[in-house]
Length: 197
Image (tube, rainbow, N blue to C red; front, top):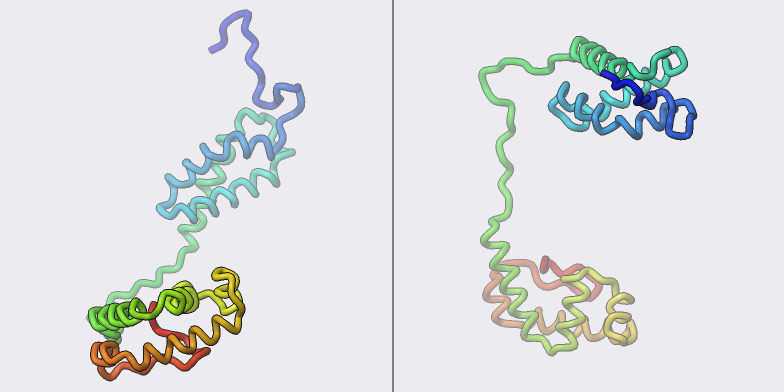
């Protein structure tokens, strides 16, 4: 309803008097149209795809649409028609069967045992001198390269290599770690990965 004496601006023109463009329409009405698309499908990603398809159809018909005040209705109709068409083309890939097709779960490592190994390794690392411990932590816990570790600590790459090598020897010789890990693989040679994640 219009009140006499008040002129409402037309939706077909912007405040500068230029004709409404497709881009400005989508920017202004996109969120509302996306909510409509989401009401037609349960998956938000499918709703975005549905809206894109409907907007593509609208863009192709843009010059033929005479009354741009009816654009929301045009897009809603395109959304509904597109969704109906998708639903009709949908393949049904579900089949009734007597037994569930899920495979038997594969046996994996015991989580408690893996945690015990990590704890034992950490206790052994804590026994290292501070400088070696810092280098082992940066190299294997933080996964930094030798160059990055050297840069962080302000030492040469050679210093990192030799200190880490000595630290790994100490870890291999740690009697408590060997007792706690029992039968686990030995600590890696210098340059190999240390399993301490």
